[in-house]
Length: 518
Image 1: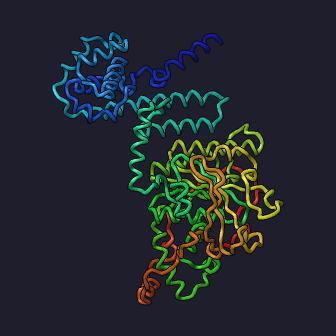
Image 2: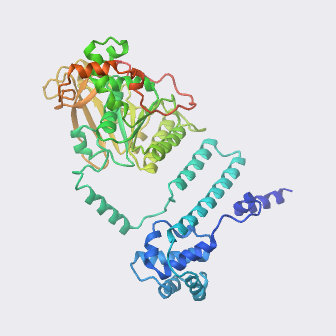
Image 3: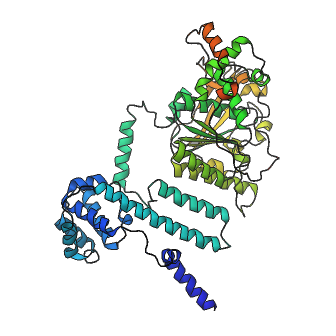
């Protein structure tokens, strides 16, 4: 009996599609495959239309895969493409007989007279391939689901990543040729000429952007500080700059503060009204006017907030994928890393869990090709240090893996928090902060001083008067804003993600912004 089960299992693994479909043939379009290959042999124009749509694996028949692979190689080498050149290419690759021989190539070319509708036919072939991939993925999911040794979260992540690949119409490649990489790099460098060197997403702080050239796709950026330094305030100021200033969609995962609290902070920063006044609704008539006149930009900002507490890496990855595919989000911000959970079994101690989270965030950034910014807590060793108490890389809390995985590690430091009146060079430090770039995998290390307005929890360039009024607004305009029937609630209707169920977290982790106003 055991031998029979073993044989059945082995047969099942090698015939997943047939078992799942109960003997049915997988989706295919052999006639269209023949028509497309024949059209490519007789008309190069048809090949130009579909070369970026198809790949060898989308063809069902092995013979067709080999023929298309030969055609693709000829196209890349800019060689002529016809029956003779394809035959010679297959012969040189040792695949001519496996592809059906010269007679089969002649048959394909005789079945079609033009390349009309070749793109439409190619998309049908691609659809059939996607259906076969879905069957394969489903079969793997069923098989792994019966395996009790499989981790359910790993299985969910595997399944969603496979479906994400199909959604984007691409497959993972095991390698890239140097000539393709060089060509792409030259195109990217050329495109930067018009962007004045800004290759990534601008933070809105000009001195920071000068050093980083913007936050780069696939980079993991860590912003660390002790509680009260303004980590949350910094990313909210940056979120405003990116979403409103650069009109770039961003996603914010807040594990500590609610979406409403974050939005109240952003309203304070955008309108210039102290957060305490907003919280108590203790506003003068002019401040009410100011509120309604300046909140419109924030209302239409492409900011998506998820305030699920204790979100796991798996949940974050799934939501990030949806944000990118459905809303075109170009950056993810996380507040903050130590409040996340790994969401799996057998992770080990807290240090190993943080290492797992750190590696996962880097993998998410690379998979989605977007920058991921994560706030991080610093250990208390900063407080016991003498002198200026500037943070160091060794102060990163709970794991050295954060420093290892991150492309950029930065710190926020405010001497004023430690009752200091001046910077180390003797200049006044009141209302100022330092953005310290302590690790930069692809650039320079530098300290940038920024203005910090504590009453509004806002960072800005030190030489920028952010709230200077460019144009005087008449009192009648203000009055019309006040009398507008639009309620305050609707004025701050920023889209957010509905939080899902969360996983447990350590309630003893320090409040990162306990000393912050608001």
